[in-house]
Image (cartoon, rainbow, N blue to C red; front, side, top):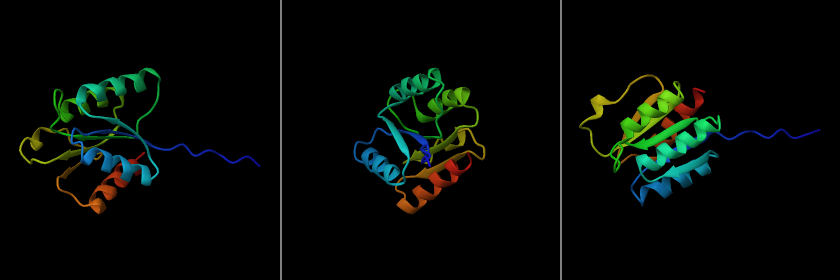
Length: 130
């Protein structure tokens, strides 16, 4: 009897904070997700384009809003053109400008600082929508 390989859900983490980024990646790995990482919006865009060109799927875009160069909101809009139902979790340390974000049932926002419990709950809610 062959053991079926369960495909891990893929999450792109886009976070410029060099302290927070590895913590998020470690937590997501512990939750048994496949994780790819970018430090800024432009690097994330290149990763998204590569995934799209290879006809791969992404299950969650987890992005800081305030990134150097391209911000998380603009990145999310481009990602949604590639995958219209893509789940997105925005992270921000600021509440101003939040009203300009796209909104639907596949988009959540958490504000820094946040508890690990809130973070894992939001991720699980968004990935479960698949």
